[in-house]
Amino acid sequence: MRVHSLRALGVLGTVTAPLLMATPALSQETDSATGLIIAEGWQVVSANCTVCHSAQLVTQNSGSRNHWQGLIRWMQDTQGLWAFTPEMEDTILDYLATHYGPKAGARRPAAGPASVAAAAQSLQDARDNQRQHPGVARRGGGGRH
Ligand code: HEC
Image 1: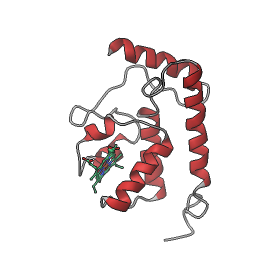
Image 2: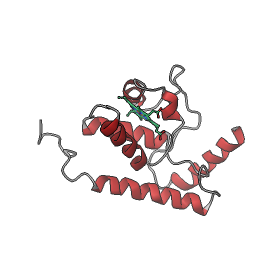
Image 3: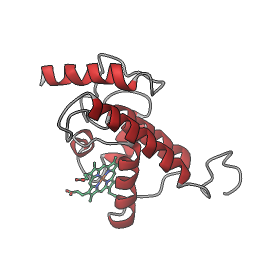
């Protein structure tokens, strides 16, 4: 476990750091009640994502921003999850994609080129994601009420 996560950190450091602006802190504190990593947005996630099921479901999952958004849409469409404002959803997705992002080596056989592909894919997902929102009040937020 320890070796595994050290390797993951190494991969994160070399592969995603140049791509993403924010480099995750090396020693991450977790909330003792939920197990969520304490970082910007964690309280929003804690308040909204541990109501129907344990936070473990969240912390054991991982994936790109797109993956998380898909899960949220699914829960909204079929499980009674409430709607978020675009700002709130951004906070939640930023938090999840940053701290519970695609795992290097989790489903892919090897680190290295595959991880680079994974990182590129998640960037691509992020862009697709933004493209899917032409009508949502993302800029300004003053257009709708
Ligand atoms: C209104 C209730 C509700 C809320 C609030 C909720 N979920 Fe869920 N979620 C569910 C249900 C129901 C399931 C299916 C549980 C199961 O399969 O045991 C689920 C499953 C999941 C799963 C597992 C999906 C899988 O593929 O197995 C994840 C991850 C998840 N939720 C994340 C979140 C996150 C992140 C939030 C906050 C944005 C959230 N949930 C808020 C109802 C909710």
